[in-house]
Image (spheres, rainbow over the protein chains, first blue to last red):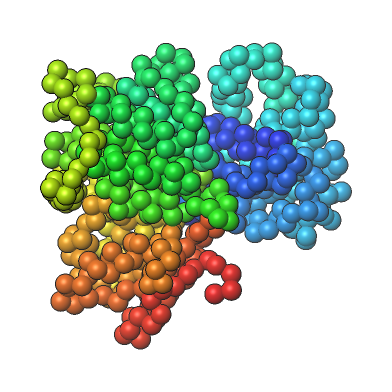
Length: 192
Length: 393
């Protein structure tokens, strides 16, 4: 099963971590991959910790369980670092990507001794500057594509533009801001 | 030409129902099946489906409306989960007893109480004796395929029974995965026209649902039971024809690495995939293990299963529903009964697993295969009614 890349998303209800995992599945699908994108459902309250998952592979994965040993962890809300075991099972040769204005070095002490790569991106700031509101999921998606190298970047940006025109067909005003947020996050991610 | 897509299980079912071009969908929302009528009603609103969408006030009414529509000679379907299926109960028997080929997408969810929105099979397993054919689906692809095939099975003159197509709530209903879709025209051609021998709107006046006195009720019940028994042949014919169309070959159950298997797991729906991964892992180590994944639970493939298990030493039957009979879950008791006439019966144990959305992990399946090794070694099953993945056991 080593050819499957597994990603676990940690966020809070309302931040779009689930949507981000589905968008990542979409983007990977567009490059010809087999994908899974699924959230773990519980009481769906705004602000409650939620988890979402991706499997991306060259052959269909038949696994239908949650992900316990991810290659990548994406933390959409840095307040979860002290609330949830975000690095639990995370592979040493994997990486964690955190939405924070802080540097990877500053956050590493909060990561329960995790020895792998740590990346940060200030998705909240990018979102507020480009979208006028705190919707960190789009910049986090851009950053995870950058960090993981799962998808060729040019193709990813092109596909995202396409799917946003589809998704926001009745709300085209948000497309430009989202695309800017996506590009910026790919440039501004720290730790590379 | 197949269409390469990525859809959730719920989207896949809504897509199948659109391509089937239902005359009527009547539905009431309940998690996790809500998206099926939600997506479908969007198709209707956008003019992509010529279906009359009836937003009813309960699942009892949803099934009543479907029964009425099919009695009028139309094609009708609905979708539900858990307590929604429980509220349909009375009408499930009316649909099968009136021999109306209604189709239903069951997005499996646990029954209350305690209230829980997540997956297990207590809803559809509770409805296993309602005269409905039951097809189970490992993933979005199988849910889509089963939904399309269910039309041909239900409407076949030798069957005329309703069919429910089950898939796991959230685990597959809300998971985006790759899928191959048929072209609309291919679906239209495959399912053909619904041409019942009688209907309320046909020229000859008929009554539907009158009192059946002791002079007739038993005969009708017998005919329904015969239809269920006879449906197996029709199901296999439809599977074969669908396989020729799509390349996806289906049987009453899938045998995975069973050729020389000494230990086997019997399972259905999404966890069959997880089990397959463990089976591969153990096979790589030279262990003779296999999986039987049930697709058709009603009618129950008794003779075929017995044959498939005749060379196996120990079998674990996995039930994602407990029947509170104190002797094991519903799949187990049927499989055990199927093995009774075998000259050399395998040892059989039952595992209740994954209730209320408890995640079914690779190590859970490994534990089951390990337990089977112990049964083989001991030469006796020991405790037969077991649980895996529950704390304190």
